[in-house]
Length: 504
Image (cartoon, rainbow, N blue to C red; front, side, top):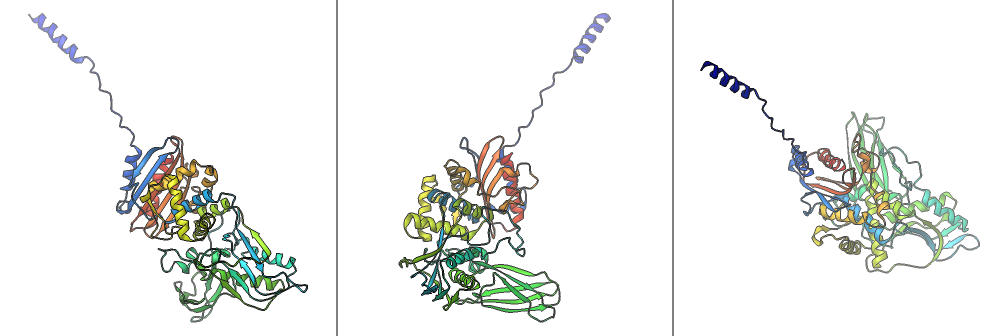
């Protein structure tokens, strides 16, 4: 009996000692892009309180990778320029050029005299400046001079007049911007936008981006007026300097343009130990500005001029003055180079010009309204929903312009599939390298795989374009953010994380 008990006990112990099979460990699946997006949108108070729209598709398959409020309308800011440049590529072509002419009613007589006015006729050319073409990344320091002179294009035209034998003009120098009806400010621009370079009036005659630089340097004596300088310094300006030099490093400068007059009032205080105050400002009458500069360029070459500089505008419905003897002309760089500047540096004026030039070429009159009609037809071809957009300008400075992320991606997809695919993509800033993305995505391995257009207004930040992913190939994406009440940098940080996740 005892022996039997021992045998049973050993059997039980042996069975109990047998190895127990372990259950396989469950490995959690990596979070999806959609899950990661939600985590990023809730990563801080700034992003949680903002209104976000995100849409991204894999271009090779059309597969949706991300969609968050993709069909809701947003203020897109300068993402609008994606549409203006795409419309220009499609309707005008990347090789399109602008022309600026100088004409008169007569050729110079045997003594080199022109009896009558000399007209500088704007052809919508936005390249009449010191800017280099093709696009080159330049310093953002407004004090640092550019390598070229803004007078260069005008001096080129003036030299042609000299070659034609012009020695005297017994008349006025007329800045003629009648190619487009005079409509300098689109609906929805803020009241103070026209004072600054970014909101300078839209005109078919453009010189130096219709802008100038104002600088104030503190005087040696307290209470004295600071030294005020303008560049370019044209006889066009009438500036009242009411600023005083005060003790300290603080400054408070107020700028105001007197209504219905070419007069700028500068008031306030400038600290005697403060840095030089510099501001880029817009002119109020671009055609008069250009005519004044041409008059000075001609006089420097010894041409006698009995008249004054003046402007010639045309209202919608009025006829244009045509004819005359062409004495000088300048042809612009190709449109693809113009569009590259528009998108790389986010140049508002140049984008507005593209919209009006399309209207003139396709509909016979260079108005903003006809440009918007042509844009509507274009977006129907793109496949955008009719309620997915509302355009009031070509630059995005208007807060009445609205877009859905889906509409932006539809456009990007269309351009990717078009004959202008490569030329259009090359107009976009490159992450960490140039344009408005030169300081973003730096240090990220995929930075250079991001080609996208920024957008920024108060409480608005946007980024739309292409990202090249090893997994998904080229992706078209749009991220539009509105209604945040925090520093824009906090929102941009989240935007950039989303884009880098797409580019993985």
